[in-house]
Amino acid sequence: FIVNTPVAQTLTTVDILLTYCMDWIDLVHFPYYVGDTGSGKSSNARLFAQIGYRPMYSESITTANIYQYLGETEEGQGIIIEDEAHELNQDREKIKIYKNGYSRGSKIPRIVSGDSARIQKFYYTFGIKVFAGEKVPNDKGLLERLVIVKMIEGTPRGNIKKPTVEEKQQLTQLR
Image 1 (spheres, rainbow, N blue to C red):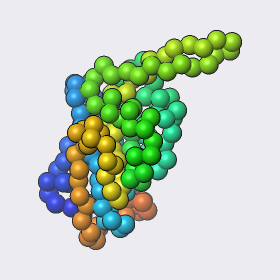
Image 2: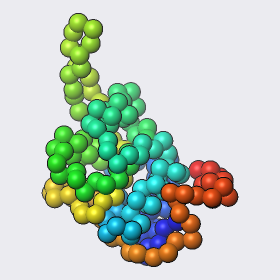
Image 3: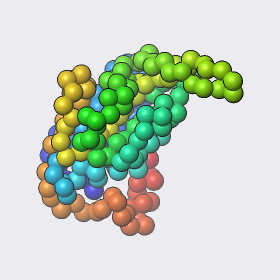
Image 4: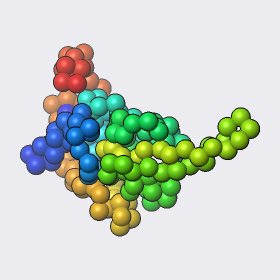
């Protein structure tokens, strides 16, 4: 499904495997697939969504969705995959979550309104985040946590966005 250099393909493979081993790891990097339209960056994101551990994939993830997904009880319980992430610069709150989430033990406090009271909750942020976009966000702290993978155009043998029945079976088997 992916056409890229052997190093980029190996990195993607290892990162997908890493999503299943979050209990053993204290620090992570975030893969960021960057390239022009049709370069395969979204295909990488969808590959993570198909075979990564407990993925949340979207082209538009709100901060509330991120907090709800990551939760308050256990770290590294899934991966966040954000496609079309080149607009990330416009969401400072989301960048704060991502910058905080590269190391085990990271939490962010938030006030939540209950029935008649406001309650402070602490949300875990640790875990792998995967990004795909046409350009890399310009945030120094976030850039330090990213591994930039430049995509190259090519003709893959299959289309992960429209897998055949046989390809779906292979993906399920891999997972």
